[in-house]
Length: 274
Image (cartoon, rainbow, N blue to C red; front, side, top):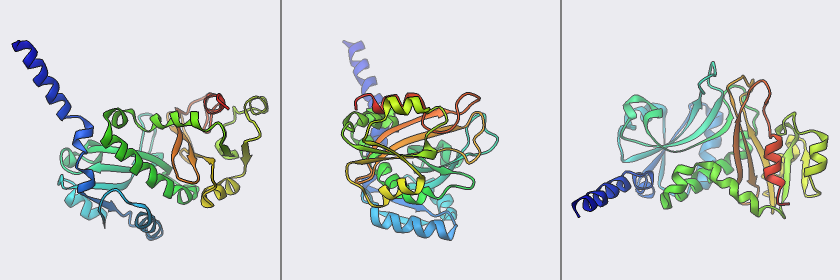
């Protein structure tokens, strides 16, 4: 009986420390949106936050204010971060990162409690597509945060969990920007996997579907370093142009055999139920 009681107590304590519980206060706390200091980027960022942020009260702040406030657990912080993977010589990607203030802050952002970190642009010389997709990025961050507050499986499963949504896309139009398709997507693969509901087009045309909020349409978005190197990662997404729901999210490591872009295995996963 004593052993059973101890097991129950231990299990209860483990539950208290889950991510779901740690971020359960998110909607009651102020989210500090940290500006970059780049006027052009910040104006666009502020406009999109004002138009779309809906799950918590928010205030804008500078990086200096973030440094002074990050140790307080009374705030969450949404900021742009640069990500550098183990084998990269320098950071290759920009992420939209949501963290909780408090524990670990003195050691840097990487030691703070991360709610979500979503890749959205190259760190150097980004293409400009990130401005088209920023509204969707903000919606994805908010959706994932609310889902993580609801279930721990969502919190720990990551954004890849949303790839299961592709099973519901068999009757949707899928628009691929040609530059998002990797060199391994041969004419034979296109002939075998692409049906009349799959469109391959130039970047500007593909982005028009997002801007116009085309109904029943998924649009591709690839995030990779401007000059990918061995050890960098490439992220691939399919996003609903109408409501910005994430339908596919996957990444692969770039190396000698695999360059940037959607791979044959991605195409198979996306099209197998069509």
